[in-house]
Each structure stands twice: as C-alpha cells, then as structure tokens.
Length: 453
Image (cartoon, rainbow, N blue to C red):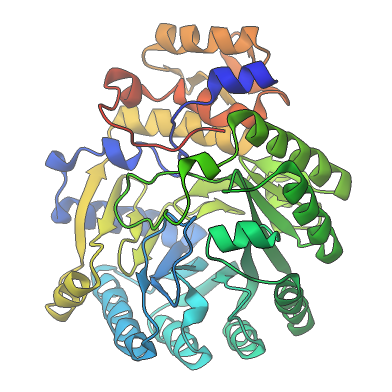
C-alpha cells in the first residue's frame, strides 16, 4: 500500500462537480442561460423530487488555519441581520423567476460558522425562506455547528424549524495540533453539543476528523477516534487536510510545510484511522465518508440513492440546487453558477435586484456523460462505460488509464463494467481522474488541486 500511495498521491479534484470549477467554460456562459436552464429543470423536477438549498453564512469570530473555505473574520455581530436580509432578498429574486412554489427537499447551512449567528436570526432566516416555499416529502435539513459556540438555544431553535441533522468539526483532540490550526476545543465541548442534539431530538449527528494536520501523528489520530467512540456520532467524515496555501484568503499560515506529516506518516494515519473506524462499527459509504448502519447515508448507499453535489454526499438527488449567499454555487443540472465572493459586492447587487452570480458553466452532452460516470464511481464505486447505447467518448484513452490501476488491484474491468475494489477505495479520486476528459486534454499549468491522499 505504501508504494501505491507514493505512486498515486498527486494533485487532483475532489469532484463535487464535473466539470470542476477551474475547467468551467466562462466564455459561453451568461446569466440569461443560467436562468433558462434553472427554470426548465425546476419545471421537470420540483413536483417529483423537490429542490436543494444551500445557504452560505460566511462569518467566523476567529481564523482556523486549516480552513480553505470562503469566510469573513469579525467579532461584530451587527453584521448578522443585514446579511440575512440580503440572503432573503436573493431567495425572493429566485422565487420570482420560478413558476410555482419551490418544494425544498434538502436545506443546508454552511460557512463560515453558521452558529456565529444568533438563534433568533437563524430562525428569522429559515422562516423567511418558507414564506415562499414548501417542505418536500421526507425533507432533510442540516447545519454545521462549531462545538465552541453552538448552544442549546441554537439547537432547539433550528430543531423547531425542521432541522434534524447537525455536523460538528472536530478535526483532532490533541492540544498541540489544535494550537497549530487555531481551533482549540476541548472534548467536553464536543461531548456537550453532541448530547444536547440527541436530547433535543436530532436523528443524525456527524463529526469531521482530519488527518495530515501540522504536528499530527498516528497516535493523535488513534486518540481522536477512540474519543469519538465514546460519543458514537451517526456519521463521520474522515478526510485528508487539503494543503492549498496558494489559494487567496484560505488562511493556511502559522505553521511551516515542514510541520506537516510526511507522506509515509500521513499514509499510516489514514490506514490506522480507517481500520479503527471499521472496528468501532462505521461503514465506508463514499469518499472519506463513514456511517453507522442506522444512518440515512448508509441506507442511501444500500438502496442506490446516494448522491454527491456541491454540498458533499446527500441521501437523495435533486436536479436543482440553489446556492444563496456569498461564494455559493448553484446547479440546475444543465449548468452551474457561482455567486460573487465579496460581501460588499454581494450586498450591492442584491440591493439592485440582481442575482449575484459572476461566473458559471453550461454543461455539454459530453460533460453530462462524464459526470454520470464520476458520480457512479463516487457514490456506488462502479460504473458502466456503455449507458443507453452511448459509448463513453475517448474510450481507448480511458481504458489505457485504467489498465495500470487494474494491474495495481484498484479496479476490476470486465467488458464495459468498471468496479472499484476495496483496495482501490482510497484512490477513488485518481480513478475518477481517468474519466476527466478536460483535465487530460489540458493539464493545469499551475497548481490547482490538493493531493489526492
């Protein structure tokens, strides 16, 4: 395994979309096209499956130096109310486009730190959304909570408006690691918010654990997972720290590259962590994600409904996903659109009744075919190169790229069927890259992606 990790540990996308953002064709995109594809997809799918809604709440009181997300650091909580007002205005701009009330199947609050906002303001936000929307059948609402500032009042307020799933960023329990990443949160804080959620009635609690952090050792990962065992969250994300210091504003500073684990140490962290999670009772349901058999993500994997989009893994698929707030990305299934990243620019556009997108991509027939295969690999660990009599484009080249992986035991190729082996699951990003026609036609001239393992 060590030799394989050394061989395949290269920069690569995480494939929350295809095409990936650096390969969007910006020149052929327009806001008019985006609105047209959105309306068409909405008409086809709103009644049958509903839509997904992602709301980006960008504010944090302090900077976590492992974070690559878009955020604004401030302790001024007076920013909450105006921001929520503009998010609700943006939502109204979308509702004015659509021919009927949206039925929301999935709703997720991300950030930033959603629990930077007061329970009252979060309640105002959600109630404002549902003045012009309905809840779809079997809806699932979730939010990201910071263990240090999520209160019982936060949990109760969001529960009262329909939330049943919460995710807490744990990262690592070792103090030296926490100091390096500027995220000091004792086990007791995580224990409290996990137990409060369950007492209130949340049906799914998730923890995020990261390996490959500065100063982190295999012993630290083992300790974090053993402490996690005491709480048994319903699902877990166990993923590699994405070291991308070249990206503007990601805040990855306060430590040196030399403080990061070596590739061999990182491999050991991953292998030991995965082994322990299996022993504890977690099943791998997709890339970096694990769940208990009672959780909806595991059940979705079992019944074939697991899906992946800009929100990560979800238990059901919707064609339409609308992103609200700065930097959010929307998906109409036929096109992608991303909002502006500056809060000031966002506010200006909203105040002028303009949907605040600044770039996007219209998917071609080829894009959709490639996306289908990558989604199948990411969600089901297999794909069929021939679907509905449409043979995969550039089939010989894709097969050539997979042959080496087959020799290494990562995939099984039988006729047009590609199946990822248990041994190959840690390399799912590399296997997906074999299908990424845009990436292979034009390799990036500069570093764009984090390492795959």
